[in-house]
Amino acid sequence: MHLFILFQKPFSLRTLLVIGILSTIALGSLAVRAEDSSTTTTQVNRSHWYRGALHTHSLWSDGNAYPEVVVKWYKDHDYQFVAMTDHNSVPNQTVWSNANRGGLNALLTYADQCGDWVEQRTGESGVSIRLRTMDEYRSRFEESGKFMLLPGMEITDSYAGHAVHVNGINLVKTITRRRGDSPRDVIQNNVTAIRDQESTSGQPMLAQYCHPLMDSTASADDIARVVGLDTLEIYNGNPTGGTLNNGPQDASENLWDRVLTQRLSSLNLPVVYGVGVDDAHDYQTFPSPHGNPGRGALMVRANSLNPLAIIQAIKCGNSYTTSGVKLRDVRCVNDQITVKINAEEGVQYTTRFIGTTRDYQTQLGEASLMGRTLATSTGAVATYNFTGNELYVRARIDSTKLKENGAVAGETETAWTQPMLPHQVTSDPDIMAVSCWTEY
Image (cartoon, rainbow, N blue to C red; front, side):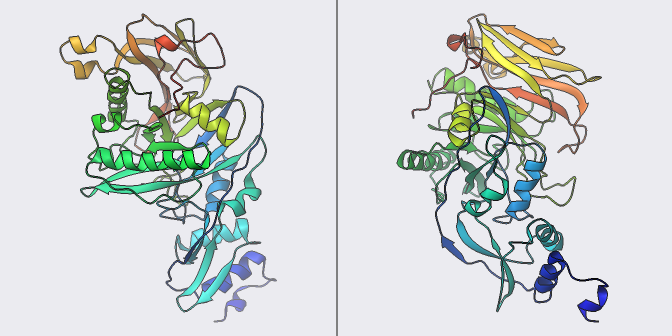
């Protein structure tokens, strides 16, 4: 039967596109040519919370959707910024991808949303689709003060067969994985490469350690000693990410507390901030064991929506991580931390202030005293008064609301503030009292 017999009305653009591709589809390969990328700057009012995704995948690597489809999902779901972090490649090159990749649903969705500019070619290996660069699709999505894209990549390295991955965010060009003689060396070498590119380009960048418990041999001590590391994933919504919200204080938080304690005591290094991410790969099946979008996010308080403002705010700790709980305010003024929750009716909230005190090394069982609960509060407003003996204090806000499409069964919505330091308390209500060291 010929394809045209199946249709009783004129072909739409989508139909013509899909028929043309499916009629000659075959397995193929990728061809790559390097190009450059650029950064868009926008402006908004001061002291605004922006919702962001800092770990996403598309058909540029092992995701199952075209990049425009990924970006549209986040924009349609009230995110204000998205970093595209596919494995080992910044999205600023010419790449032809076999039309089979991602499956038929990926192709149909792409044709529906972007049929007017889908570019295809047919060769010996079949039909290929050109993956658009970020510079090309920026104009379809970015809006001043409303939505912004950040180019990035997941530097996919390893040590002794175990994963050691570092996200570089707001990169200018692809970074080749650096390898190393130990897990710490691998992390440090890749972070240093990000810092070097930042220094050379003059463009602000983030160095983020990914899914620290996923098949990794890197210890808390390894991570703590890395110079130039900005953020650590404490919530990863991909079930394989190993940082799930599956207990009162899960293993990823315990690791974070050990990292913070060492850096702020014996190592004299700045805070590594915690971030929540999706690590999304699957945009077709919900729920998915491969990671859906919308599970984890970073809320950033910045004075405008542009790369410099957002990245500087993250480096200064003006953010909180969430898997669903929304905060109205987080601040530290006059030695008091105040957390205000945007409470939902019928939902109960418990806030635990967690930290390490300066005398933890003089007490028995010192490892268990790294990141212990110092105070607990219930309700929509929680406060903590510094005694002066704390290295840092952070808050975890647990709710009784079941998370929609949680990464694990029974997961409830949670939020995590950044660590705050008693000796850096500020009277400025728009800036949280946290470390803001950006020189490495």
